[in-house]
Image (cartoon, rainbow, N blue to C red; front, top):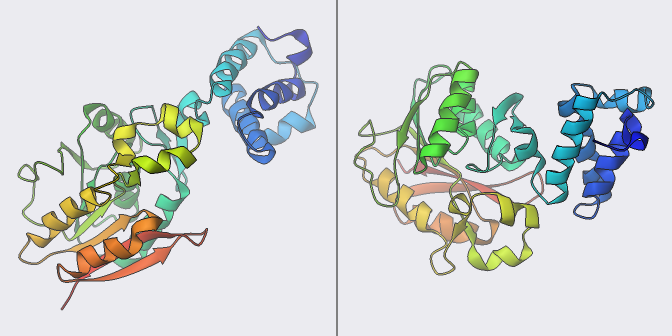
Length: 288
């Protein structure tokens, strides 16, 4: 149980913030403490400061204590509370899947703007939590959406997220690197993916909470083959008699190389920068 000096809204907030401050910048530590207490105590963050002396019941104290212990060890907030808001919808997340990022939201908005109102078939490669496939199925109601992943646990979670949000997506277990034969259609109008693209050598500049807690299978590629998943997706798309359009999240260090890969296969490419000015997305469209 928390000590009595930390059993009010404000002192509980300070308890959590102080525990995570060694791991994060102050602004992020503050945001984590607020979000954690919002979810744990089912309050709005403004209540922490509007009612600073409000008593935290014993069950709440126990939850704060156990959750803060996990946060202090570097476990991401999203795994501790078990969910992440993505394009206005809560998605369950576990250490079996990557935590959705804001950059991926930008990719989805790009696709939705391009494809709005169209009757299309869409394939999400490496779906993880299902956030891309489910969001696009919600935003593009005329689309038939399919999603693949190599991980059974990831697919189970993605199915749960689709069911919770009452969205229809067909999920298929598939390893894009070795098996493209069990896909349900011979062709897709749209292929989208946020594949593994971080090279092993980039680990040294990554935050501890990512390295120690998020699934490496979904993050990393060998230093000598950074485009391995893009090559597989390009191979799949170019095998169609009439290839569809491809939207991908990319490693900013390999934007030129990724564009060249698709250009050599007969695609026109556009690289788009994210909100931070980094080359983070690419669209590859078949040349006329």
